[in-house]
Image 1: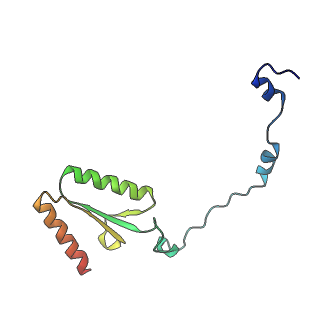
Image 2: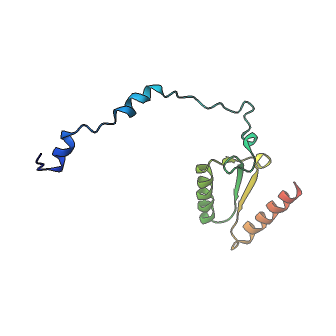
Image 3: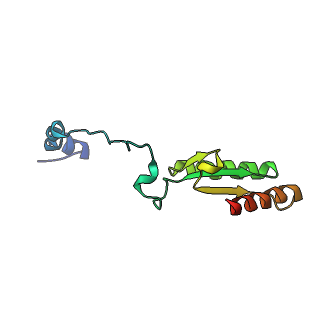
Length: 116
């Protein structure tokens, strides 16, 4: 058998994996059951991505951009973002240390958290 081109070799032989196609009809798709209570923490509080995160930012536009980026990354990894402080498992406080008012608000936020 003389082969002039590699494509002739492929087209001359049937290399379709027919076993793989015929077994597809045996696959049963099942939906995952949702947690009845709606509480993601039931899975385990220490598993990354099941906690809720409160994000607060003070300072310049650069800090706002940083917080938006961090919130996007956390959301992409499955963390739930919340605007309710009491609902959050974790607080992400981002402040500008160059501007005194922003740093003062940051320190007040930490004191509030310590009191809770």
